[in-house]
Amino acid sequence: MNETLADDASPAGRPWRFWLAVILVPIALGILLSLGTWQVQRLHWKEDLLASIEARRTAAPVSVEAIEQELGAGAEIDYRAATASGRFLYDKERHFLATHRGQSGFYVYTPLVMTDGRYLLVNRGFVPYDRKEPSTRPEGLVEGEQKISGLARARLDEKPSALVPDNDEAANIFYWKDLDRMAASVDLPQDKVLPFFLDADDQPVSGGLPIGGVTVIDLPNNHLQYVITWYGLAFALVSVVLYALVKRRFRS
Image 1 (cartoon, rainbow, N blue to C red):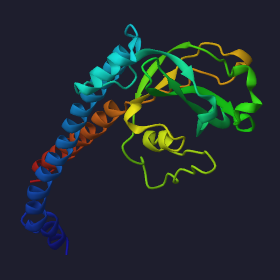
Image 2 (cartoon, rainbow, N blue to C red):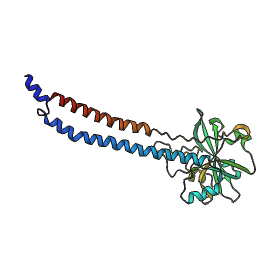
Image 3 (cartoon, one colour):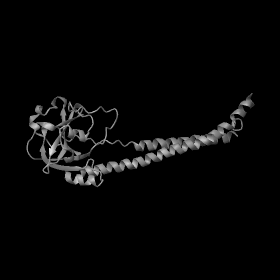
Image 4 (cartoon, one colour):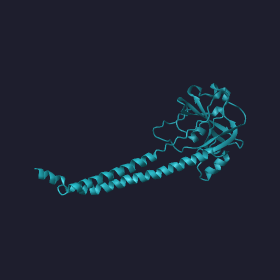
């Protein structure tokens, strides 16, 4: 009985287990190392992306005309510091559902008529839910020519997710930033609307609303953790295999 058990536990007793390990261990090790290497590449990509965004955000502001030229040349303009001058059309505000510091409300997107007759949709900032209508915050509706500074924001070409509701243009509530529909819903001529947004900075506004400077740059960089995880699992697998081989050698 004991001899039978010993034979079954030996490589010769159950050769299929040995050969199964010979096949599966290299495959598993290759997968783990590939995943780890992929995460290293993703780590470098994310670090370069964050550095690029920081450089654009902290660079000397340029005019929106310069932003337009950069965009036409294929350059990345998202979060680029920029300035614009013009007159706001407060009766054509568009409202994007948002939260700010735990409070629900809206980001106020207001068309800015520039001196060349074109329009720029400016995210002037946040207003609480009950201050959605411009009539509830008349102090902030400053007339005349104004200079706005902030960050250029790239447009979205499609809804970011199927889970995002459709925009309710009739109620003037936008759940995703559809630049074309924001402009068309207030009868702005499409060929005169700049193809990007401008998020205004936190320069104080008369009456305190909208609250500017609401741009959130939150790009998590967890790739180093994933690198450690996948390479750690590969190291653990190799350790287990080596331990099993050493143990088997001493038994034989």
